[in-house]
Image 1: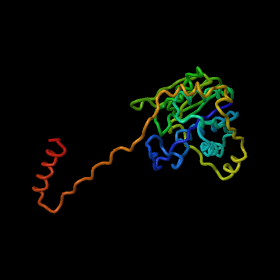
Image 2 (image 1 turned 30 degrees about the horizontal axis):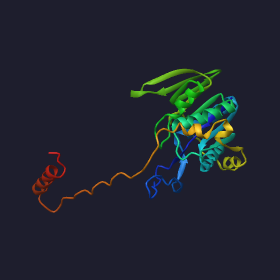
Image 3 (image 1 turned 60 degrees about the vertical axis):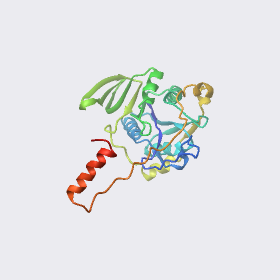
Image 4 (image 1 turned 90 degrees about the horizontal axis):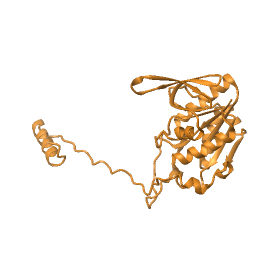
Length: 262
């Protein structure tokens, strides 16, 4: 079985975001990046399947050169090889553009199963996996909490609203999105990190996949034109030193005059 795990590089949740002086771009080169946490569960599940049934695990990403660091992490966990599809020609992207590019590498590699995180923690849109499945014509289940393969099909469970469990029988090939309840990702061992540096990591362009940059640019229909930080919250007021009655009266007066809530 050949399993492709689609991963994404996201900003560290504690990263300091900076905006360019003209307000038109985010200065992401200066921010710390990480492997999208949900994608770690997808890598772990692929490795567990491989341990039981054999096959090959390929970590794939569409992004800038810096994504190689995240692919290497997947290789250090145990994946067999990595593929980076360069996003350098594209100033901005879209979920449909990413899904289109990924669909071509899935077809080129003749994958039997595609795993990904249920969402990226940066944009939180949950779109790429669904679009990828639609472009491939494959079934898709997201937020998977349990996965068992049985021949040409898979037993899949996901948690729905209200804590309800939905159960599916999915015919392979399929695209499945991993929830954090699916497993506990392994740590990359020191030997694994050393081996990762010797594993194949190929860089491709969209033209290598038979795609044209101009056609892909047409898939970016919503463009960010400017960025700005949210307004700073006004400083709070501290009341002390007076009698309780006087401070309560002052608070009530301010709620009427300044906050206009009374």
